[in-house]
Image (cartoon, rainbow, N blue to C red; front, top):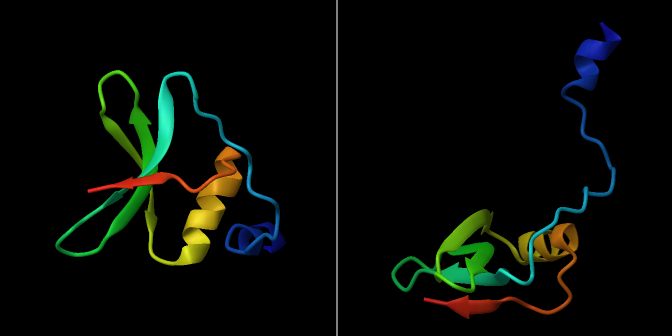
Length: 79
């Protein structure tokens, strides 16, 4: 029974670092002009295609995104 409740418990572990290819992608934030919604992700340098990763609801969400992918600077916003 103890293992059952461990499935739903929150863990305070550090997020696992994820990787992206900086030679092919750059971090970016897509912003909606109408609703103000912001989505963090990566933009392909050759095609310009945007890969959505995370919806940004609070400033902490952006910090979490940067920490998970090891991004030091704020990603560029585009509309």
